[in-house]
Structures are given as structure tokens and as C-alpha cells.
Length: 640
Image 1: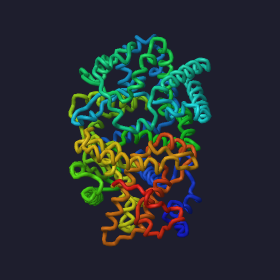
Image 2 (image 1 turned 180 degrees about the horizontal axis):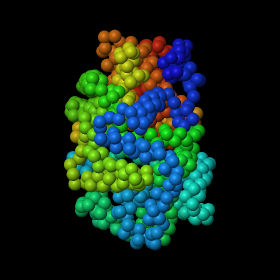
Image 3 (image 1 turned 30 degrees about the vertical axis):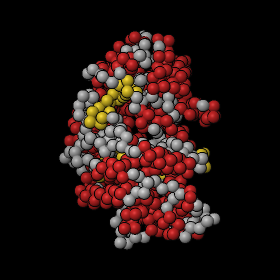
């Protein structure tokens, strides 16, 4: 049953909106054994999973095969992924050559010579690079140098404060890696040597990396180095020559996202640490390749991830094959879903709804009482330039024209060829004009996003259904659902990160000093409102979640105004559906993980805290001092 089918606890509305609306459902809801969460977004994703798995199974069985070459290629790949007999028969053999490629390297010099080829084949490095729009000139691409992923979820896990949690997780990680080495046919001694060297290298990286809160501040990622400055970060590796071989042209700048990490690179990457680096790559590759091999290796390779998320068991083989294949062909699958289950009429309807929310937002900006006329004018210019993408892209990413499944090769070999195609395309972009048409999410993903570098909002088809949006629910409920989500994404253009980008998506200050100071004071109030709030998994870090909270607050205020302007305004339905969309039940492990690394607040707080800032909420439910949902007027935070 969905939470809509359970009764609302009327007596609780004034004390805990989230529990009043969702409490009965929460008592009965059972998290699927192969998932970390259920309810809300997750339920929609589960329904889409069932629908598409059934559709694609029919295609696998030779029925309903569409006249679409890209979908046909996807089905070939899905068939390869779902052929567990073949995967079992091949065992570890398809992966052997990829591991040997690293194990055969003799020293740092040997590795340096192979680095461009290895990177283009998907091997990890301690100095990952990517090509993305230049944050200060988004019409052109730039080369970014980043820091590698740590084994534990975040730098903070490597501190004394989280030692017990880290020790438990690392014990699970080590057991998983030992089992994988054993399944691959290696001795226990060989496995232990590589495992311990990999862990030592990971531990050496951690102190120099940013934590999740630091990474949440976009603008601090932009640190421009000349080639000469970048070259000085490593005496052991010629990083500029490496970068130029990756992108196939000369590099006149490198944007370093983590200067502290690159300041330490000279001590991290040396001839003396090469053995650790080699083992670190071997272990990472072993884990990355396992899902493409036997089912036992696939299940084993997920043990650490399941410990982090709290999922009780691995996905069944067919479902795992579905996810593996759809992830590789995500935009192809998204277009299929968008055309079949959403369609051009819904696309036009929702586009109109987004335009309406933008108009309401513009009105709110024009009536804003704390911005100067100069800043307000620039904010409206930014809003006028906001791009809107709804449902699914108009055209398929041309990259998919290059995907061709070799039915005589193994699943892993096919994946390897696709990886090379993707990376060649990625690194080859540097000198090309920026392509703003590519979507960052497929249409069947239940989500939405704002891209500050392009100043666009994107709403994939999957989120555009009940409880977010339905013709069967009151218009006010739709405003409390999809309306608030739409306005949330618009608000990201004016959150503490997005506000630093102009109408073209360039990082460029368009604020007066006084307005910026006032905005920062309001953001600080939002930080304080959430900081230290307790949940069953621990305390909220107000700084980590501030950008999403500003977007929630702006989104809810804007959607509320739109609902009030609608002829059939029903604010009770508005607030109840707002609480309903955040309905979710998650494992404690997942809650702990998200508190540490996620920029979103826990769902029950998103539902409850934001409404306390709105006077209309108090009037709608007659909330008085002493009620759990009451917040004195002086403590209410309103930004947009």
C-alpha cells in the first residue's frame, strides 16, 4: 500500500506533520531485502524497474522488438549480461588480462609510460582528470584535476571520532577483497600483500582530501594552475605530458579542485610508494570487474556496498543484469521510457507548469524586500535565461551510435570497449564547443536537477507522476508535490552555490556587496536552523545541507504562492502532499551514511522544518505556541 491509502492522524498534525501524514504507513512498510529504502522516490523507482524489466524481458524472448537500432543494441547487451551460464563458464578468465596489465608493471617509470593508455581503458589513478565546462567560461571546456575516491565514504571516517565505525566497515571490505582474490584463483598470501598495501595507500590519501562539507562549496573547486605550476605538483610523474596525451592537444591551464591534495602529491606518488599504488589499482580493478563475471563474484563484490547501505541481500541475478545493462545504455532506455510512458502531450503540459512556476518566481523576485534594485534586476535576467528540459531529450546522445555489442566476446570485454569509447569522447571534448544538450540524467530516473554551469533545470519523465503529479489529485496537492520540486530546482539558481553563477552559467559575482552580505546572513540562519538537529542516525551538519535547504525553502514558498493564486486553492492538501512526497523508510546504515555525505537533509526534517517557516502553515492547521510544529516568528527563516 502507498502512504496515500493510510489514514492521516489528525490529532498529530500540529505536533509532527511528517508522522501525522506518514506514520501509519511507516509502521507497516517493509524495506525490500535488496534495497536500502522504500517509500516516496524509491517506490516510483521500484515501479519503473518492474515495468521496464517486464518490457525488456518480452524483447529478450523475441517479442515486441522495436524497430530502433539503439534499443536492439541494448537488448543484445542485456542478453549478454543475463547469460549467467556463459559468465559461469568463463569464470575469472575475461578479467585476467586486465589485472595482469597492472601486475606486470615493474616500477613507477613503467607505469608512467603506460598511464595514458591505462586511463583511456578505465584504470584508476591517484590524480583523476576530467573535461568539463570551464566554470568561469562555460562556452569552453577545461581540464580539471581532482582527488581520487577513498575506500571509506568520506574523509571524516578516518578520524578518531569514527574509528569504531571505520574499523567495522574496513573489516567487511577486507573480507570481501580476500574472497574476490580467492575466487580469482590467487593465494591468500598474494591477496593479503596487495590488500594491505592498497589500504596503506588509501590511508595516506585521506588526510589531504576534502571532506563532504568542503566539497559542497562549488566555488572552492576552481583553482586555476598554469602548466608550469601544475607540473610542480609532481616530480615523479610528468603530469602535463600525461594530461596532453589524454586530451590530444596542448593544455594551457588546469583547474585543480583540491589544492591541498595536489600540494601533497609529491610525497604520495614516488618510486618508493609505487608498490602501494600498484596494489591500490589492482584491488580497485578487481572490485570493479567482479559484477561482470560469475554471479558469486558479483554478489561478493557488493558486500561492502550493502554494509554501507544496509541492504540485507544482493539483487537477484536477472535484476542485477537489468541494472548493469540499463546503466550502460541509460539514455537509450530513458528515451524508450519517455516516449512510451510519458509522451509529447505530458511533456508539453509539464513544460507549461514549469513556465508558470518560473513566472511566479519572477514575481516574487520583483517583490523581494531585501534585494537592491540592481541585484534584483540581475536575478530576473538570470531567471529569463533559465533553460527548461522536461521529460526526455529531443535527440539521443550521438555517443550511442558508436556502441556495438560483440556477441562473440565476453560481457567484460564488451564493457571494456564501451568504456574506451566513452573516455575517448570525454577527453576529446577539450577543444570542441560545449554541448549543452546532453542530459545528466536519463528519463526513467526519479529525480530532477539544476546545472549551474548551464543555468538549466531538468525534470526527467519518471518524477512526473503521483504523488508528485497526478490529474487525479487536487491542483493544490500537485503544487505541494511537483510544484515544490520544480521551484526547488529553480531555487538552486539562487542558493549559496548557484547564486555565484550568472545567467550564462559563468562563475561571476552579480551581487552588490550589501546584498551578498545580507544573503550570507540569511544562509547562516538556515545553517543554524538545521545544525545539530537529532535523528535516529545522529546529528545534522547544517553546513553540509545548506544549499538544498535554501532550495527547499524557496521551492516551498514559491509553490505555495502558485497554489494560492489558483482558483481552487486548498492549502491543507498542499501541505499534506508536501509531507507525503518525503515519505521514506530507510535502513539505519543508510541514514548514517547520508548524514555524513549527503547534501540533502533527512526526509522527515525536509517535511517538517520548512513548513514551520511559513505563516500560512500556522493558519491552515491552527498551530499555536506549545504545539510541536510551532516556531516563534523571530526564528522563522525566509530567503526567497
